[in-house]
Image 1 (cartoon, rainbow, N blue to C red):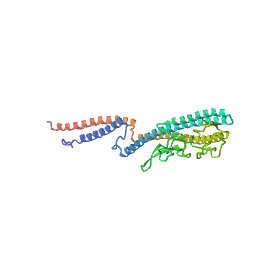
Image 2: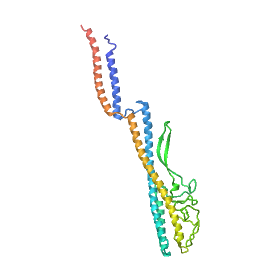
Image 3: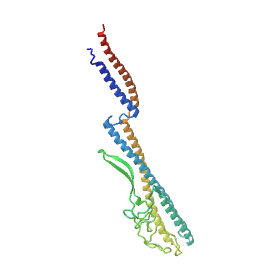
Image 4: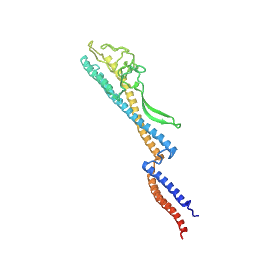
Length: 333
């Protein structure tokens, strides 16, 4: 039926053109933004998942930074500990050399030992990174005097199946690796070098030895200030006292080796966690991309097709509108 009130063909062509224009707008938006899902209205579920994953990825980036900072602190302490071990070994050699030597030679060895003791303190005091020093400490104002709280290095950001989040840490027990502690209360919480030890190298309550006498049961020394010569009395350590000092040094070296091992293990674990975190962030990026990124090959092909459809739609609408003009011919004489 020919009608001048309703042009059915034009309405159909117009609906088709409007639909093509909407699809074309969607495709152009995907191409310009690079996203198939750029807002919640595009796909609410995918947008929600991607937004949460992006938030978690930012948290992982912060974790990666924290691991880098923690690694630097551990590495600093590890370097200082190794230098301290080398220096304590030097003190050990001086003690061995002084055994059975003359009093004059023992005084000379004492000068060398004092220089090495000063170097030990210098190494420890210098082992500071970003305000943290785990070798030369002062626990005077700690929650428990003489006790250095464990250092917690942020190592992971976790989200379980219910959506609950948590933080994982790598703990470093500084109390077991400190070399000096200005706030120690007794030999049990002192540092590895300024804590008193007996001839076996074990921690023991302080019992000062009288330099020059034969070694007495229970005599104690510290690696940080043991001396072969008493400048006040002019006395020189006896060979039996030097033997006790060797035992003290051996005990300290054993504890320092354990401390260096613990630091090395922490360093390795941090490095492994850094590698894992980096890989996990890449996995998150790939997962987000699978959900929301636009396939540019597909979209470019679709764009060309829609542009052709748009041109054909405009042509079809033009033809439908011109059809109504044929009604005029019915009224010509």
